Amino acid sequence: MTASAGKRACRRDLWAAAGAVALFVSAALVGQVINRTVYGSEGILRLGRPPLYAWWLPHLGPGSLAASVIAVLVVVHGPSAAQRLSWRVLVPAVWGMAMAWTWSLALVDGWGRGVAGRLTTSLEYLQSVDEVHDVRAFLQDFTQHILAGSPGMWPAHVAGHPPGALLTFVGLDRIGLGGGAWAAAWCITLGASFAPAVMVTVRALCGAELARRAAPFLVPAPAAVWIGVSADGYFAGVAAWAIALLALAATRGTRVPRLAALGAGLLLGWTWYLSYGLTVLVLLGAAVLLIARSARPLPPVFLGVMAWVVAFTAAGFWWLDGYTTLVERYYQGAAKVRPYGYFIWANLAAQVVTVGLAGIAGLRRAAGPGWAAVRGMRREAPAGRGALAVLVAAGLCMMLLADVSGMSKAETERIWLAFAVWILPAGALLPRRTHSRWLAAQAVLALLVNHLLLTGW
Image (cartoon, rainbow, N blue to C red; front, side):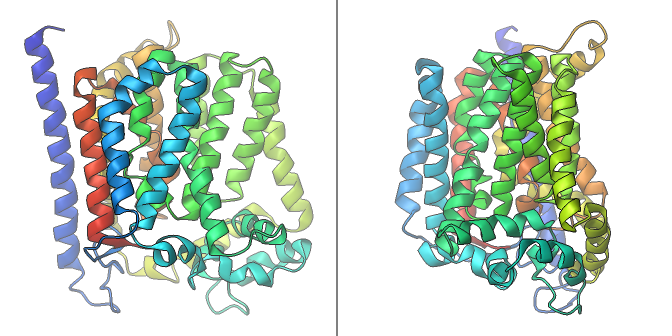
């Protein structure tokens, strides 16, 4: 690429980022107008600051300084460190930095409000931990308490998910790790582990160089605002490792590919009992197998998934009954008044502050290699930038499928974390000389969101 062509491409990156900002601002302005149709204290959208589930509250907190320091370190030293460190050091280093970034952002809201109290509200899982005395009885009766008005109705988040989500926190409580602080630590630790999982996947499918270039973009991700602390961050981490193991199995990037495939199936099956919406991960899994040109992992993956299906069904919970009952419950709540016509595009606008401007610019860069890779799939497997573009496109397709389903009206900045993390490595497609600037844009956006808004769920 000539110097002039490179400059034009960089200008198009900036225009893509500017367009994304305009989309978000439009969603915010239109949302405020729609919200004048009063339906309760937060308008018909049931959002304080549409398109986000948040409230305007400029503030500082204990994590402000730490978050700023981590941002500077990643911007200044991240790209060079990702090239210099050995792979065995780089992977845990990225995980550690992602955890530090997420913890510091959560602590901007303080220990109680930002960490220990997040999962203890009236809508959350910890409210119901003490109600589970016998797991089999719990699973047999679970669906009977989903609908609004039913005896012993579950809180919103328990009712809105399969029983695996609540069982996770019940398990923590039973081994002596009960309460909001331990639950938060669990969600942040597992949620931040998406970063090494994505690195492993990109290396297996696209090569070590692109994995190293993607690594810095996985640390200062604005998505960390919602990973710390929400159970959806935990779900995203589990889902990311399911895909990573699948990639290792499909590319024979491990000495035990069948065991990796079985592990992928077990984790994939578990995600389906954490969140109904994560069934769309089959799209990303299919993309992995297409890139690797291999169907060898499918039998062990199937066995792993079926192990959970058999276990839960035998214990008394049938997934389809839970899902169909949830759909009815969903439209008993805010979904019955939230307009589909607004959220079909505002949901996507909300992702601007999840994947960040670097993610948007990377998506633009992925269009060319992705289209070329798709056209050439009959002749050869995608590789390098083309493979990464296909992976990123699969992340976007999962968002679009969830969007048109109508089951994601608002709060997608949290609900779609498992999809959003696969947009982040698109930053590797940006010119290396611009990485520090794009990383700065990511960090600044996350800091602004966390310091100007009080996010909630």
